[in-house]
Length: 175
View 1: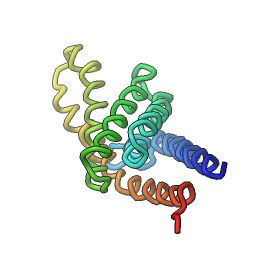
View 2 (view 1 turned 120 degrees about the vertical axis):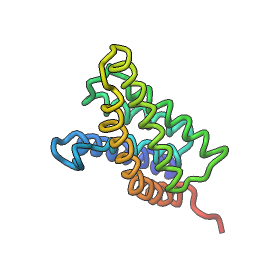
View 3 (view 1 turned 90 degrees about the horizontal axis):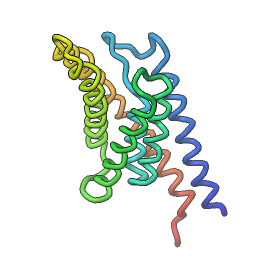
View 4 (view 1 turned 180 degrees about the vertical axis):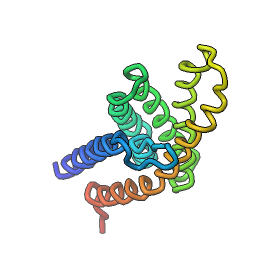
C-alpha cells in the first residue's frame, strides 16, 4: 500500500511540474534569448522518459504534448503524438543501448525537437511552397531546438533527483 502511494505521488508531481513548465514556457517575454523561447515541457518529458522507461515515459510524453497542444497553433494532438513517439523511443534506447547521462539527455531533447519542429515545418512551409524557408529554419527553429536542449541540463538533474528519492521510498534497501 505504501509503495503504491509513492508511485502515485511521483507521477502526480511529474504532472504538476509539466503543467507549471508549460505555463512558464508560454508566458510572454519570459526566458526569451535573441527572440527564441525554449519548450521546457519537451525537455522535462524527455528527461522523465530517460528514467521511467518506455511505457511511463511515453505516457508522460503524451501528457506533456497535450499540455503543449493547448497553446500551439498546430493541429490539436500534434505535440501529444510527437512527444509520445519520441519519449517511447528514448525509453527503449535507454533501457537497451544507452546510459542515462546528461549528454544523452541533451542529445535526445535536441533530436526530439528537430523531429517535431521539422515535421511541422515541412507541412506548414515546405509543402505550401514559401520562398526562403531555409532562413526560417536556420534562424528560428534550430536556435529554439538548441535552447531547448540546453534546458535539458537542469531538467535531467531535477528528474534524476526526484526519481532517486522516490525509488528509495518505493523500494527500500533490504538489509
